[in-house]
Image 1 (tube, each protein chain N blue to C red):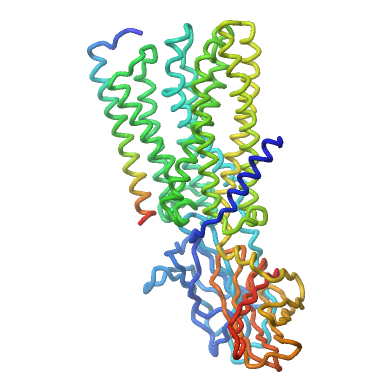
Image 2: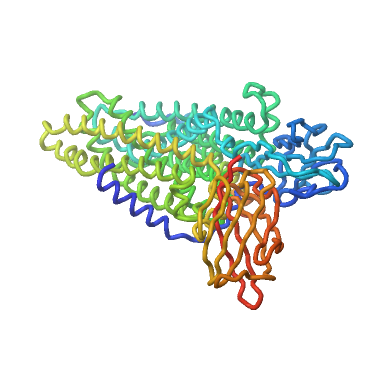
Length: 577
Length: 39
C-alpha cells in the first residue's frame, strides 16, 4: 500500500471511530425456551419450544435434542406453534430417562442469515452432574464457497450491466457524433451480455441460498422454487429478479431507440432512457432492503447509504469496463481521439462516484460496528478493512489516470505522438482498476454474508480483565474493593462454577447482593442472569452450565455491597469446548 | 442515420412507453419492499 493509501486508511479508520449508538436486530433472536435453559425438570417434557423475536420458517429450522451419548431424541419435523407464530416446536420421544440433554438449534433470519445456539436442560429429580457436551463451533456458520461465488457473480453482473448502460447513455453517447468512424455497438453488446448473465445469476444465487438454508441439493429445483418466497430474504431476491428483468427490458429498448448521431434526444429516447434509469435505481435499492441495512437502525439512513453505495459502485465499475470495451473495439487510428472525448467525461463521474462510495461505506461501517476494535477483532471488521485497502489501491490507479493519462490524451489533439503511449497507459491502469474493483465487490459479497458483530461486542472495551481459555483465577480492583474471580473448569456447555471473593482493606465483604450476567460477544443471544449466593464469608458462587457456546463471553458481576453504592465489574472470558 | 419512417414512429413511441412503464413498475415494486422494511 502506498503512503497515501496508509494515510487514507488511517483517516477512514479514525472516522469509523466516531461511533454512534446503533441497535442491530439483524438476526433471529431467541427470547424464550421451554424447557428453560439450564433448568432441571421433575418430569420429561413432551416437546421443546423455542420462541424467537420474529416468525422463523420451520422448514428452514433445525432443532436437535441429544442425550449425553449423542442419541437424537426428537420425533417428527420442526413445526410452528398454532398459538404463537414466533414459536417453533419439536416433539420428543415419550418417557425420556433422567439425565442431561443438549438442545442445539439453527434457524434462518429474515435477512437470510443462519443463526444458531445451544442450551442444556435436565430431567430429574436426580439428573446427576451436568456432563460436557460437544457443541458445534459458531465458526461452522461461515458461508460456503459456492454461495459466495454465486453472490459475487450476481452482484458483479448486475452492477456491470447497470453501470455500462449509464456509461453508454450518459458518458459515451456523444462519441459517434464527435469522432468519425466510431460506434458504440461494442458497449451496447457488452451491456446486453452482462444483463443476460445477471438475469441468470439472480435465480441461480437464490437457488443456492435456498438449498443451503433448507439443507437440500442445489439441483432439487422443483422442491426449492416453492421455498423461494417463504423468507423475506427470498422474497427480496425474487423482487430483485423482477426489477432487474424490467430494467433489462427498458434498457434494451432504450439502446435500440437511441440515435447517438443526434445531439438532442427525442421524446421516445428520453422516455425509454428514463424508464431504464428508474428501473436501475429500483434494482440497486433491493439488496439493502433484504440485507443488513434493512435491519440496522436507523433503517432509513442505512438503506440510503447502501443504495448510494451500490449506485456509485455500479457507475464506477460499469464505466471502467465501458472504457476497456471501447479501447478494445475501436480501430487503432480512431482510439486516441475517441478516448480523448470519453475519458475526461468519465473522470468527473468516476471522481464523484468514488467520493460517494467512500462516504457511504464509512457511514455504513459506523452504523454496523459496535466498537472501533471490532474492525480488527471480528471477521466482519477485517472484511471491511480488506475492502478499504483494495479500494484505496484502486483509487491510487484512478488518480494516475486523472493526473497523467487524462492531460496527455487532451494534449494529444495538438501533439499526436503523445496519444498512443497515453492510450496504452490508460488501458493498463483501467485494467488494474477493474480487477481491483471486481475484487472489492467479492469482498462485499463476503461482507454481506457475514453476521455483523452484536452490540454486546462493545462491552469488552469496559472489561477489567481478559481471561481464559482454561481455569480462571483473576484478581481485579473496582470501586475500592478487591475482587477475585474464579471460573472452573471454564468449558463451554459444562457445569462451570463461578465464584467471586470480595474484600475491602483485607476484610471479606459479607451480605452483598451479587448477580452475574452473561453475554456472548460474537453472536446475538439472550442475556442470562444468575444470583450468586454467599457460600463462605465474602465468597459468592453459583454452579451453572451458563457458557452454552464456545467463544468470548462478557461476565458482568453486579455487586450491591451493604451500606455502599452498587457497582459493576466486567471481565471477558474465553471458553473452549 | 436516416429519419425513422412514418410506420416506425408509432412503434418507437409504443416501445418508449413500454420502457417507461417497466421503469415505473420496478420503482413501485422496490418502494413497496422498502416501505415494508421501514414499517
